[in-house]
Length: 460
Ligand code: C2O
Ligand code: CU
Ligand code: CU
Image (cartoon, rainbow, N blue to C red; front, side, top):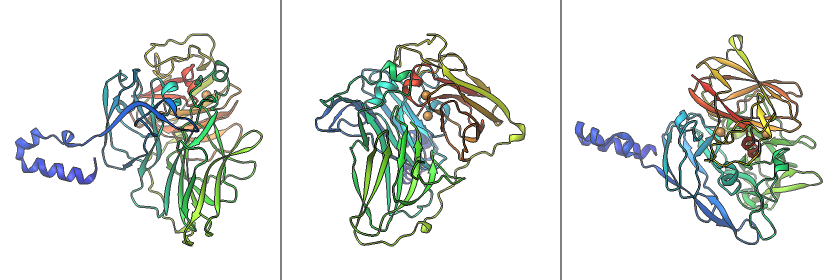
């Protein structure tokens, strides 16, 4: 609900006196955003791809822009023939709004609706996606960017959200197998067509000499992006939704910016002053770099400088108390046996390959019992131990955590909801368990999540 609408509705309630108040409770006055999960078709390349999933019949899921402190209400309706539920990745919402089937809500069957309502407390770059039938629905399109605006405009000339994702299409532009068993047991099954905002190598006009906020959002089910910005003058101002507390260097030759599935980077860029000059965003891949998108300088030189930008709004994050912290270890590895229980409502890959603490957990609907029970308000160190030869972007719902140390590399101390855990890496992260509920905890390579690498933490 917009502030303006809220003022109007509370005015109405007051005019009606006390009886008016009871007849017009505030919530009934909110005009919810209606989001309809539906089949879609769209030309990602030559021919139109059928069998996509979006929030409109013929285009990508919209960028949702929310304001901090203003209640967001969305009536989400499912018109698919399968179950679904919507999750707001990275947002610290009340548990019942988190969209995890059976853990926080009953999933929506065909024709069902669910009313999501929450008030964002953090400004930054987030995203949304289903948490039921994730493989089928995300791979077919249902991943969108969600922005919570800063309280004060930092002063950019252009704000450009970029939804990075791939598609598994055959020569006829139609979907092929969304995953393979071989991929699921290793690094995941990569797409065949790479896009930014559902376009291949789009070119965006940007004011010459102006300042752009590039919001890169890795929503692919598998790909770990290795971003390069050759020759760019810029600064990474936020990672995974939160302003950086410790500098993250701009990518350089041999040291790309790594963005695993679920991760985000907000980059302040200064566009070259000369009209027509181009700034290319690349993904490093074996053999050659691929263009993700291009920014082209247009118009007269605005002569802006990066240091003109105002700082991003700080987010209210509880300070951990390391002196009191308890350490809990989680081991991510192979699945010991085909032990996944799957209730069948949210889709199964038909295999279990992965495990947390040597138990393979069932897919989207997070299983039988919590991996750990955390006491509300206390500080915990989670020791994330990767006993596998693959990388895993480890994501936790509802809470924020910060890396402390790794056995392999220096990890900057920045708040996140998704940490890249490299092969064989052991990383300690710290959090304050300040949001009660059952919070899903999983790898964001969807094939890993769906074949065992998922569970949940309980905050009581
Ligand atoms: Cu981005 Cu459990 O989700
Ligand atoms: Cu999430
Ligand atoms: Cu994984």
